[in-house]
Image (cartoon, rainbow, N blue to C red; front, side):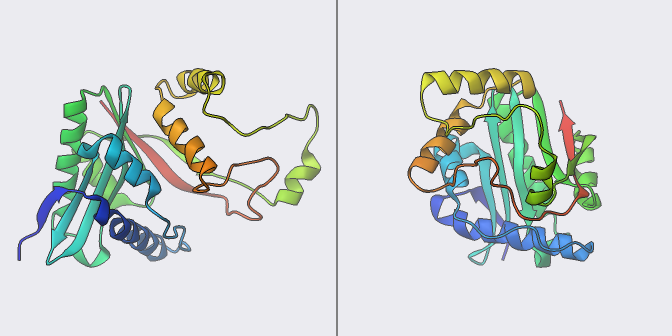
Length: 226
């Protein structure tokens, strides 16, 4: 039975998320790393599907999802958030076909910059992205430490933290931070996260609530093309 490539539907997203987690953890374990992903409700992909359905695609065969591509657009940036193929179905050209359709999303949106983030040890995918004009630009280091050790080293002025609200005052400051740090607007994402927290879908991040332990390693590489 041939593989069918079609736009994703809401009912696909939970299974697609499970495929992403399974594929990412299998990749990590194959390269000697512990699993890093867990299955979560597909809240963000559902939001993105409502916002811009052109960015989500599935590869389906015999009623089974074999691959998933998920991209979103903000301003002039097209970002490939996820491109995964089930481990048992790789080397069949599924990822290449999904990437082709994901690029069509970028073309329709008339974006000037394309970007994604992938593990540095994911050499096969890096080769695929390079063939399509997405080149490694800089590494992203995943570094953290014991919460107690960080608290011991704190000095100087202590910042006051408060929950973000969906109001013009907070959104304006976030827009300025985005413009300086990223160069793109992300107001729709901020509203989604703020409203999700209000309805119990997300937990607000508060200082000093840090994860108890996290490994430090060179894990990710950002790839950018124009």
